[in-house]
Amino acid sequence: MTDAGAFVLLIATGAAGAYLGLRLRLPAGALLGALIAVLFLHTVMPVLPSVNPVVRRWVQVLVGTALGSRVSRETLGRLRQAIPVAVLVVAATVIGTLTGSAVVGWILHVDRGTALLASTPGGMPEMVLMADALDRDVPTVVLIQLIRNILTLIVLLPVARLLTPRAAEELT
Image 1 (tube, helix red, strand yellow):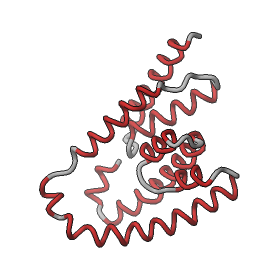
Image 2: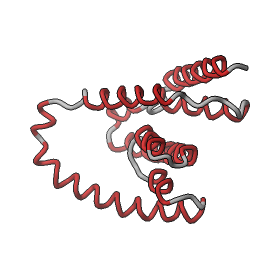
Image 3: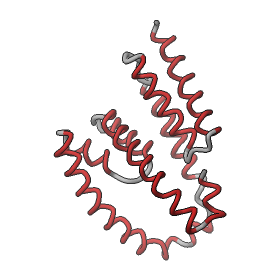
């Protein structure tokens, strides 16, 4: 198979997985569906071309634009109130992340940067894009982030349904 054909297969598999993830109403269905489908494709066809760095850069532009578009004047108006809360959340997160990254590094024998990005909570795409930009072990970051996201969703969705039944409907 040519590189162009393999690339088309890769994109088609990701699109099919995204569609299936959305149809199954998975949380972040497009992302998780595409990721799981492409991971499955790699088990069947282990040698597939990586997505071109230019394409990855445009994906970063799209993600940044999509995230920035969610901020409004009202959101910015609450900035002063949110800063102390954010600082406390970050402090707790940093402690957990440093502990988690030490465990990841110890068990998987990966460098500190990879372990840190693999165990950092937050958006998986952002951590993977950072790992790629910093020339870290991207597959390890993807794998740990994927497992973390799936386990978080498995635990969080039942809790969200109990606490906020109507809002939880939107998560699935």
